[in-house]
Image: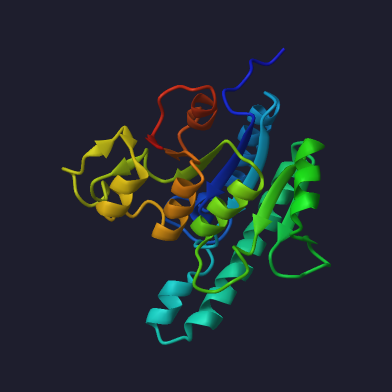
Length: 238
């Protein structure tokens, strides 16, 4: 019998870059398959999994705005990129035997279900994995905010934000070798020091609802499972 996890329901926030090869763009099926196997392993431990996925490996709205594109149009294009990633991840998870549903905040009935909270809750009760794509469905809001919003709506016990570094640092550790890693932080510290782990709207939403966050490196095998079983991994925010 699988051991019991500390958390029964989680919201996993994955950047689109998690589906690409290191330093690359697009979707790598090998990477997607590896993630799917890891999700299956924790799902076997009785953990309800909801996923919010980004689209940065395909398109970034903020970068397009800097090149002169209207922000609203750029943001909607970014939302569509998250749907492409969601479909790729869904396909990978179904191949390893996970019953999966993708729900979008933008209507696209031929490809995914529209987001309805009661229906999403029912999917989780039936032990299906949910992928939330399309962000919040509104421009000017990031997928981090979508993650906080959906986590609160789904009664998740924690948000796990998967990044390419092993926690929150005082500066970008890939650039500044003297950057200090934090083991634990408060929401107010993140807002006060303007730490760029999640945007201020998403952090404030978590703070208002007392929803903890763990930031970790998803590509380090075992990190996700260790975090779910209460081991010290990455940075804890709460």
